[in-house]
Image (cartoon, rainbow, N blue to C red; front, top):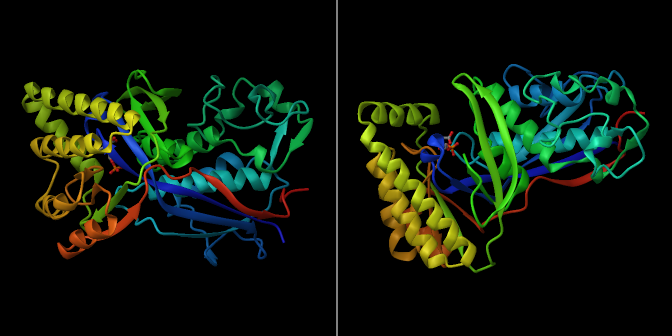
Length: 386
Ligand code: PMV
């Protein structure tokens, strides 16, 4: 029986939310909680999701990925998807990016990749299909865009690469970003998609940051014009520290929170200083992470929260959970858009900190910093086509 199971982690933001919208660096970390996607050829000839009909309108991320990776090949049959996981939805923890990245990996694994010459897939000049940030002339942000300008190369399908080497993490990140943007009216930063794909710790900024590994540039046309992001990864020294994520259970849409900050800045442009301060705090946090100085990382998180309070994106519920965590934590702050959603506390005693947050009314998750990125967990009978 042919099947592929792939998974990808959620994320939370350690430093720099909101200021990243204005070009400052933000630091995101992959968490232990994951979304798992299993795909199999459908036995009924219909597209299925968790045993029922797959509704393409209500599942735009899956629909977008089928469009980009599956629909162009008539030898490929409809699929059955099963999705499970422990990342709460709509709480700023990257559940839709994790779903998208894992789905992209599963589809690519099931399909394999056509090359124009025999190779192991590492040289994307040999790809006869697919997306990579280093193939400049392809446009993953449109459904059929990858064919543009590469007709000749794509026409040459010489060698079918199958197995784990067919899966490319950059491609998963790029496709996850493009379907996230499609599902959100053309607005999405690559922070979630890159972190859920690469895992570890990801820094995103409008410029190349010093002392960390620059990976690639993402460029996307948004309703506000072309935006460019520089994506970096970093690997801090191992230590016995944990993040406790506390969920307020309150849903506050990111778009509203971002709009409130924009309004505040328009009314009083002097307050851009606060945005710049958050940027400075994030850079201090990055330096402390590089050193593995988690006491300073914690203190810096708390400072970051004070600035987020100052720009008006915290809430009494978030502040309440942060206060409860403080005595047992190295530092704590809201994570993501704020107004509700989640807070995080950096701690050496996750049980104690988690109990304190739960007593104050939050639902908690415990994670190490920087989980593994998108991965193929199991497979059999690949490729699905003949
Ligand atoms: O709610 P989240 O975790 O997706 O975070 C939003 C982060 C913001 O900086 C507030 C917005 C953005 O697009 O970067």
